[in-house]
Image (cartoon, rainbow, N blue to C red):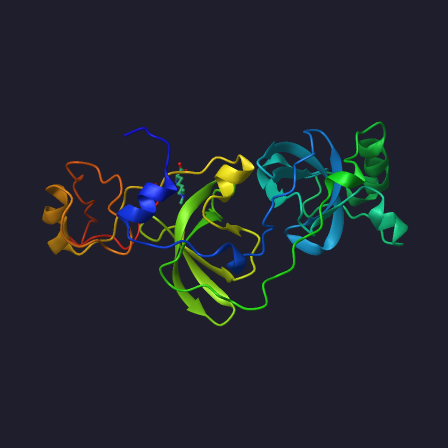
Length: 265
Ligand code: MLY
């Protein structure tokens, strides 16, 4: 039960195919992560993307960085890839004649920003220019098709990357469904989002991959069949790691017997 997640077995089990790496705006050969905790970078404020701020690398995972804007609190950390165009070396902004901005929700009085900036940078280790990698070009078209598997950032818990399935495609947009989570974490995004990765990406970049959840949206008629040994049809979501026996379905007050639409654990 505690074996590490294995994509090959899972793809077989769910009779599904992975989206081709050419669908994604990710480099085929992932760049190295040369950032270290404590280094300073310039980063677009995720909550105010036109402003450029100073951020500190709080940690690294695979080729991702956990960043915190200097002068902001610890509750707004965010993640960027080493080849994200949202980050650049300290000094880039000034060289371009622009000014570094305080983050949205700056902890101090706005008038203390210039002094704060001076202090936060004095004696700080800045990330070397070579650590910043060029962002890969976007694929020319949206090649995703419903049912294709991928790895995707859970936007509600952005430190997590999880197995997911393309649920729908509309123009430039795709619907990312997290396997085994009953829709609670699903989202629409652009096909060229930097938060989605080809199957095998986590392994390749040494990033942890969450196993699928174990909540499933299945027609009731299928449940007894799944409790007996692996036979019968498979739903588009998987039967992988179904708990035996299945836990009772949660019942909402007032709508007895009906299954809740989604559930957040
Ligand atoms: N709510 C859970 C985390 C759920 C993660 C779901 N992802 C993997 C799709 C928690 O806070 O522990």
